[in-house]
Each structure stands twice: as C-alpha cells, then as structure tokens.
Image (cartoon, rainbow, N blue to C red):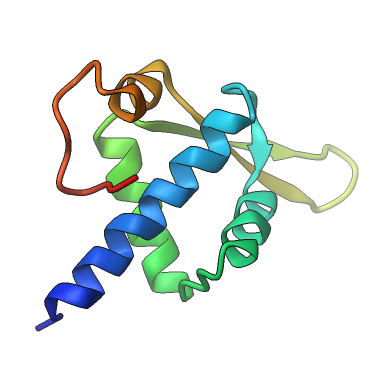
Length: 102
C-alpha cells in the first residue's frame, strides 16, 4: 500500500502533466514531449504509471489522446492535449480533484 508521500508525489506528477499541456495552449503535443517536460521537472514515472496517469486524466475529462499513423512507414505517433476542463480545474473554476495537485 502506498504511503501518503507516494500519493502526493503521484498527484503532483499529474499536476505537472496538466501544467505542461495547458501551457501548450491546449494544442496537440507528442506524448514523448510530455515525458521530456515531466523529466525536466524531476518526475520519471515508469510505463505502468504513465498509462495509469493518462487513463485517469482522460477518464476525468482533463486530456484527450489520439494516434497519428504514417501511411507509408510503419510509424505511429501518440498525441495528447489538455481540455478546457483541465484549465477550469487549474484555475479553480471547478472543485478540486484529489487525483491532481497543482
């Protein structure tokens, strides 16, 4: 069972994710760029945590995801962006969510 510091760390990690996406003006961002931004803030989630964070943020309506595929090359690019709901959460226009801490 995670301790309170682990839970706080994860909430802050998701807050940093949303901050980065909001700062990108709600434009689509390659997922790998989001992980670089997170690392720049000192957060290095493993793959399982990344998936958990993304799924939770998407289910709560704070992010959208999509895949771009190249027709000729066998290449797929995962994209993500914040939603207006994420901005509302960040700016306090909707009640706080225990899943995210700014």
